[in-house]
Amino acid sequence: MSRKYKFHEKEGAYFVSFATVNWIDVSTRELHFAIMTESLDHCRKNKGMEIYGYCIMPS
Image 1 (cartoon, helix red, strand yellow):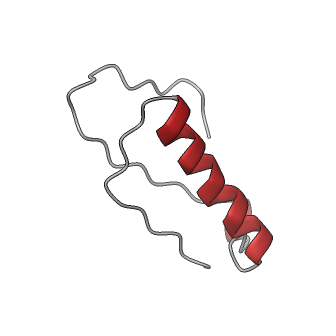
Image 2 (cartoon, rainbow, N blue to C red):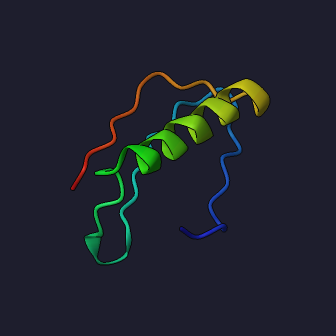
Image 3 (cartoon, helix red, strand yellow):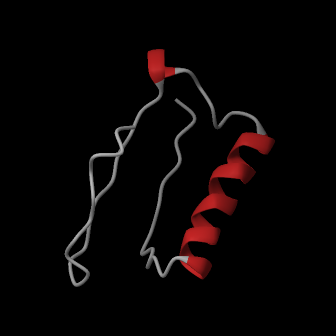
């Protein structure tokens, strides 16, 4: 994911979507799923991110 994208409008709601290289299934293992959800939780608790919902699909 490019680091050039910045979210400047603090009052706005954003939709973020991404895919992996070659569409590799990364969330089929419990460990990978846990890392992703813990990262979202870290951003929510420590970086002030408000998360209204998310969907992690295995493929």
